Each structure stands twice: as structure tokens, then as C-alpha cells.
Length: 179
Image (cartoon, rainbow, N blue to C red; front, side, top):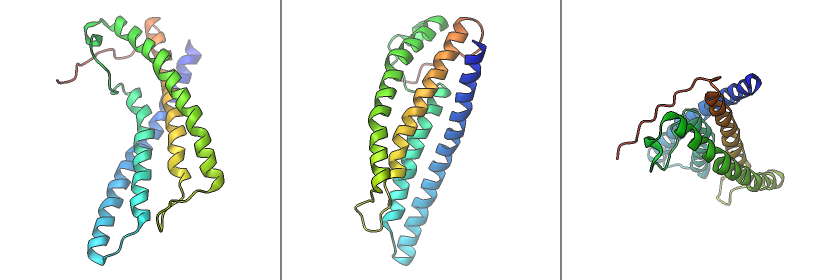
């Protein structure tokens, strides 16, 4: 279990890095959006590249930030009975959801998105808009994001099993969202 917990910590550290990239993607997207608006009104100039880079950065924010949200346990839950269970019951519910829902869905999404990325990368597909950008960097965010959520799911499974075996300490406190 010790080696698995080290693997979980490596995955967590990797997702921290991608979470930092997602954080900067939000900042850059806002900055580019504001600069684009200022240039458009001040100099009557705009470019499709400015608009497209914003949604590329938004894709990075969402796809690279999703695994970080899972890591810090701030993801959305469908809370019907989850909050009524003791910590041990919630950990078992988490394990069930991670193993039977998250991992298979992320593996399937990775399976379908990676060939699309490869196709765009090899073809060098460009945006249909004048002055548009190449598309593969945005498409890369799909398989990369799904892979990172898949890895973080493995990390969360390891940590929960470690917690059940009293070999890993984690915060199992659950605060019901405001309704």
C-alpha cells in the first residue's frame, strides 16, 4: 500500500501542476479578452485569432482544472443520501462511483477523443475563420483532460482504500451545499 500511496501523491502533484496551468489559462483568457476589447474600440481592429485563443484557453481551464477539482474534493455530487451516511459509508459510495462510473467513462472518453486529436494533429487542421488558429492544441485538451481525471480517479481510489485500511489520513468531512 505504501508504493500505491506514493503513486497517488505523484498523481496529485502532477494534477497540481495542471491545476496551476488551468489557473493561468483563466487569467490569460480574461487578459486577452480585455485587451481584444480595448484594441477593437481604440483602434477599430480585431482578429479571429484573439477570439479563438480565448476558447482554447477556456478549454485548457475546464479540461485541466477538472482533475484538480476532483483532487480537492470540490466536484459536484448528486446528494440524495450521501450526507446522511457516516464517513465510512461516504468513502464506500465514493469508491463505488469512482470504480464503476468515473473510471469507465473517462477511459471511454479518452478512447474516443485521442484519435480525433491525432487526426487534427497530423492533418494540421486550421480554423475555417480568416486569421484563425490551428485546431490541434484545443483538441489536445480533450484527451489530456480525460487522462488527468482518469489518473486522479485512480489516486482517489488508492487514498480511499488507504483510509479504510487506516494507512492514509484524509478529510472525510462533508458539508452539504446550500439549497
